[in-house]
Length: 252
Image (cartoon, rainbow, N blue to C red):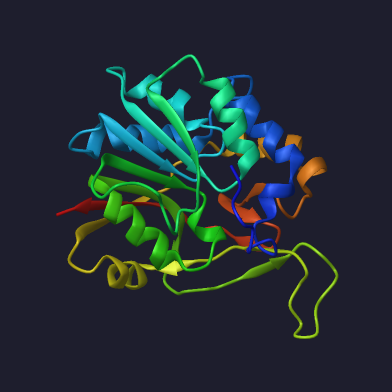
């Protein structure tokens, strides 16, 4: 399971061992559910036409499965795809007893999945951190029959932001290592989707106390400017405000 890593400068999570452990613990139920997993599972239950088959792009260790199981009690087929090999290795091990759950190493911008093969696709917390989101969203549209749910950063302007993770810069002033924290507006999304589906945007619902508890646990390993915290009711990563929303694309 090897993917050529041409994105080493921005694919920061691949080398973060503390992050791997955190997602393993979530998938095992040792740590509490993510707020995003709760909300997306609820929206699938309420809004999706059908959810017998689910694609999770940027699945990590498959930790969303636990939230999906709580809400979608009838069972479902699940394929999780992630670009980080360690996440896929962990997910296969953790969920090996359930043959309904499959995992695959892959890039969301070029999915090895047949057209219209999943009723629901989800992608949480991945789109803000990658370039070429048009490729990623069009791939989700290609492989999905019904409904797509994406947790991403939406505001009234487009901001392509590189958060430096190194104090070493190249001759062009580019950081040796960085994370994208990109914000898009509704028109940007509408231009990607075109006439392929109807767009809905839902407010991100979260438990501020849960996020701050996670921040206190996470900041020593991740760094206080990487872990998300709450400031006057809004989520921040360092000095960057995070206008999280849930994007729902209902395909036509």
